[in-house]
Image (cartoon, rainbow, N blue to C red):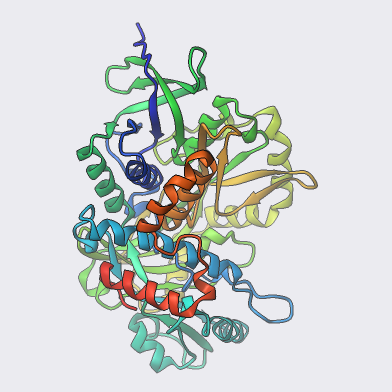
Length: 495
């Protein structure tokens, strides 16, 4: 017999990742009396996209990711997206600094570490692009201190592993920023949830939300929840629901029946990385180095050679290599893609398939690529790399958003998309990178949209947590310098 719960819970968070952890931490500070409950399908938090080995952990601040700075037909470089991503990351950094200063995150080195961010290219055309990009970015307050070089000796000083074994006559160029970081979102997620539990937030691991429907006897939502241990079902009532279930969010939002999800679909892309923990190899490279995506490749496939610091130990990761699985979660079902198809999203999904043959060709090429071809991609960055030092790991599933479009039927969207019901009682997050790094501004935007009647009262408290909230850092060099300097000092980073 299903348990009947009459008193609705104020806030239910579905999914134990960085998004739910961030939203829970914000709501708990804004409304300490609200009852919050978290449901996580797996036995512990941060096991899907927030797990450090399932994501790149770049601390996406657009210092090195070339897909945020496209080249225009006239040779100039557009930096608007890079500025937006960096602005958002500074909001996250301010909130994390607040949590460090108030004792919620006592040791910032447990989740964030200074790691230089480098962009690196080869070939005359790419060198010209890199120079134009540097010129466009160097005087912007958020990219202060960015350096450029096309000299092999200087690049060797920044990242020794990039040069040995490279042809001397190959044109190369790099930009370097000491202000970058490596973020272990798994550790950050766990620490946020640990503190929330201490503060009385209820956490239910191994509980899967099977269905969401409008409450009949109350204003809000009825959730069908099953305990994965023992399979006992429960009926839960909630006033506000956040679906932060990663790849599982699309189907739960579809089940809720809200009209705002109509037409949306998802396209899953799995990824592989090469990883080494060999101390001799790891000590040769201490940076995140991003290159240029190959023609036709999606933005999330930009190749990068990353230092990762997990549990205090450094490793190197190279990738991603794209793969395909119909699962929407790494620990999902092979039926996920098929179950997500509805009459209302069939046209958007088909039109995206027809419009993105480049992407399909790229994926097929990656699936068919031999082991040695894949390793050659690493050698483009680290010419002296040896296969015996590296092993393959499977990254988290990324579900790219397919968004309905009046003219085209549907468009494939890279990035994250917040879906909110008209009455603000349910919201969910679809999409992938740079999600985790921009979790704080995304969740603040969601709160503003879902609780417009409370926002005015909350705004002062939000400004205590994020002092520059609502201000344009890029337009105020002094404020940007002061803010970046302050958070760098609190988090133990370089400025």
